[in-house]
Length: 227
Image (cartoon, rainbow, N blue to C red; front, side):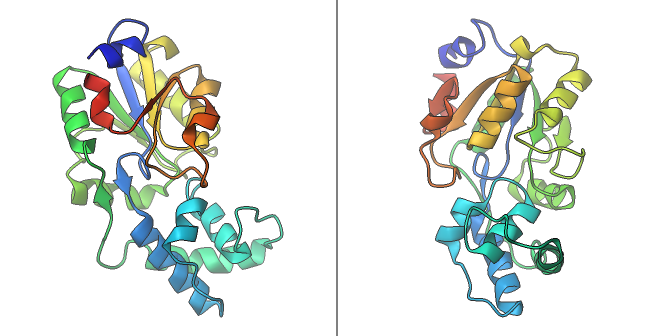
């Protein structure tokens, strides 16, 4: 508990917001399947999980653009090509057997926060329509009072709009909150919102150590919050 209080200015936070992919769940197997299906259908070679793992984090449209560019940098992909790829990706993703899994400690952490009476929210770049089935399948549906997907608002992370919206709904100040994520997008969004960010080492950060983004605290396991 000292860790949780220490990163929150010496008291328990009133609100903890979480990223989803790479923080609470490992969704790369399903994302890679949909990405590779899209690439093959468009006459390209499949990318595989290792590449897709370094491409996720900015929402489905950017993932599609990166896959079509075969690179994190994707400025050369035309809007028409992106639209064609995104249509295939959105049709495939979530339509088959799910291989997405919870990270160790994710469910226990949500349960512990709930028992402490701390409000919990989800702010993710995943398209909104895919979120409820994932939460139901992984046993997390009961924990989140507020959910912001990648297309819920006009902006997505690293823009702080989602975090600011949740804080407004919860009636809390930035000093009373934490944001927990796995990538530089999460850290940048938290910094822009004035919220302390806890980052995990095991997620998706474009192949870079999360320490380079300078979060307030880095964890190997979410349960370390309660040490």
